[in-house]
Image (cartoon, rainbow, N blue to C red; front, side, top):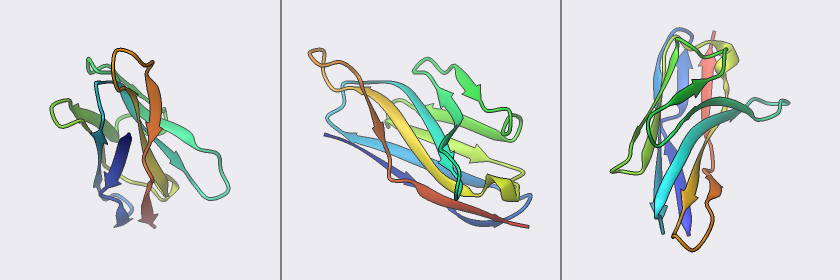
Length: 121
């Protein structure tokens, strides 16, 4: 019913930048919060950042001042601008969205398939 597709991952040197995008499509009534999580090898998935429909943001301490989340509500898309990347930022990055497909059903959390970000030292 709802699909999230991430793009923009890749290989970058330490200190470099990448911009991730995540577009939601399908049966969408409203999208509440959207966010980015990441999972490094052998570690649990962790929160990177979230943004509400009104634009309020929240960041993990490890990315504050380096990463910026934004969204285009008209395009149902969330972005993650990542600057000053470090090797420890290497992970699979997942987006999610809290989507209400209609007034009848409660909102539900959907996830993208993930995109690999690799930062070389």
